Length: 331
Image (tube, rainbow, N blue to C red; front, side, top):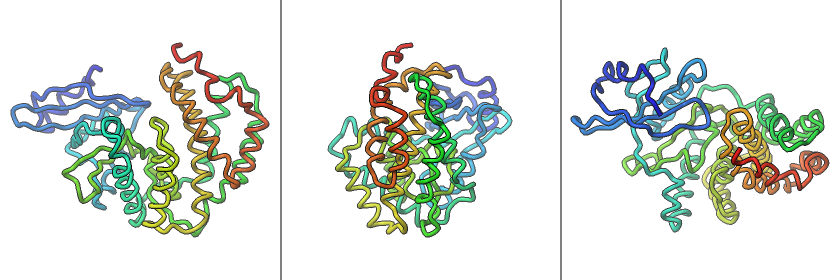
């Protein structure tokens, strides 16, 4: 990755002149990340490149300020240039939960305990001043499956009936007695860092929360335990749900909301990963679809999902799920 043209001047102004700029990562959006190394001062940072008009770093900055103010380990902000979409961030290092657990699978239970405890802690705090995760957003996201996956799989489906089915089940996630919390929306093993220097925040660093909204507490728990990119054993998922319920004591029909939001999120991700292949030329995301279909079908078994489960049974036959797009992975 070539650093943005404005980066050297930005780093100079920020007090990081002559620092090295090394590629770090890109993601499914237009954002890119670079590691900034100042050998003379023996310090490191991360440069976020969120180029306008495609990206706007201000939501990330707002949520970071909120999380930091509540004692959580979001990256400290060292400098910002909103005109060029550049932000200089604290470097949390290289110990990401996904890779750490690949090397140390015996730590899986303890790491997930910490991640669930962090969520329970976050959900006791006042929510950030963000827009609500409302019905229109749920429907827009769930609709990505009929918009992108179904045409790619050669399916002509009843999209209006799909929306109606979701309208029948989404009220369980909108109950007035369920607390409204900060929903990070992408809380999973690739966006959580192990940061031993931040023990007060469970030793976990938070990333990729720029799309946060205010909504139901089950959403981020689903994001963590029904991970698109790594298998979480069902027995561990059940243990961690029980742990969350002991710590947070959520109100409302929590188990039903968990299943509904799990199905909504998994349908959304199936659509997004198909779009990344069809529109953005990133076929590697198709390799995650079998896991996403497995998770979606598990959620659809909950009685609260009956209308949506019936729609899938009528519109998406088993032969068009799971590996339906596998032959295109190298396209």
